[in-house]
Length: 99
Image (cartoon, rainbow, N blue to C red):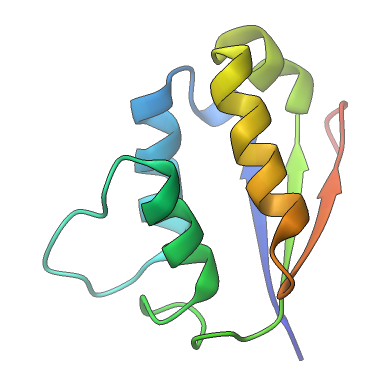
């Protein structure tokens, strides 16, 4: 069974807020902060940070994506979405409305 995560676009309004959200919901038991960059994001999604194993298949749902489109820099958001769509171990689903 795959681990399943939800990214909720109403829960953050900046790049740093996004990374804080990822750290809170995709890691567990770390005694350090994850990097605030796209390489660190890809590493966390790849696993081994307390929530799922390295290379474990995961499901990610991004709800309220329209909020993120309004709040985040478009270039940053597009790069994040690209990472989510290209990682082989991630099944990624986008929802522009609240589930």
